[in-house]
Image (cartoon, rainbow, N blue to C red):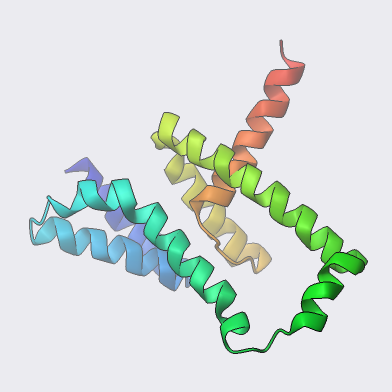
Length: 151
């Protein structure tokens, strides 16, 4: 019952923050719980991140499929400061996402803090929620830095 209440709270926080992805995700989980389709929950837990990343990757690659990005633009990626910084950003982001995944797997209780932090970022700083992996990665990085200096 506690899980239902927390998901309900997250649903309403998503509404307040005008975060459709958070609201829809919490709403679907509430619906699954209300309809007692519990067998779906372990599948979502095991493959949900993979499925979400798949659709995110598809969305990012659509401009290539639509041929909005050509060979010239691709080559500029390797020859311009913004392109090189984008490559570095991708490397750093994937490392942080990996750290975030490890944090969420080892300490799943942090998810509520990540959601609350994301909502604060959306409401007060016009942020865009990209998901708990990146937020978890940043939190894991902070924990890593704190552990380095507190030994």
